[in-house]
Amino acid sequence: MAVRSIVQIGDPALRRVADPVPPDEIGAPWVQQLVDDLVDTMRHANGAGLAATQIGEPWRIAVMEVTHNPRYPYKPPIPLTVAINPVIEPLDGEMVDINEGCLSVPWRGVVARHVNVSAQYLDRDGVAHDEVKRGLTAGTWQHECDHLDGIVFADRADPATFMTWEMFERHHRAAFVERITAFVEWAGS
Ligand code: ZN
Image (cartoon, rainbow, N blue to C red; front, side, top):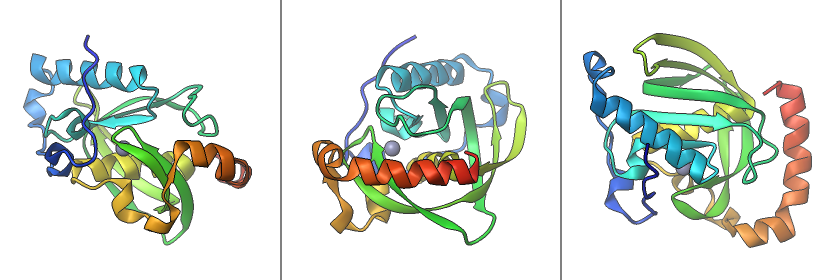
């Protein structure tokens, strides 16, 4: 168990395209330790998700979990999910604007995300999953999978929407939470 330091925007580690984990190595101590470190680090930082590239490890592993998250209190719950070699695909053209943050970026911004995606991945036991993700949860999957390709949300956001967390709280939170809460109720996740 270890809380690792999270690399910040500008660190080349955040721009690396991560390598697939050889499936026959998922049970190996180095993979299991890396998964444990990702979970510990995500929870310590109150993140909704964390990709291995964010702790400087160029492997296609992301973890996600939302319980009662003080950074994102409007996000619906996500049970602890370990996604190894995830592949996501949009299922249709439906989009939603999400005001996102990131543990590797000190500001927030608005990103258009797909509402419905398919997600194929291996869990930490090497079991294959093929699931549909929807709503804000689908947005979280897109955010984390982007990290594994060296992409951060700021690349996809209109820079005119960038804001500090303080300015989010002061000027944007109320309207965003009202809109996104209605969206979550409609989408069911
Ligand atoms: Zn992020």
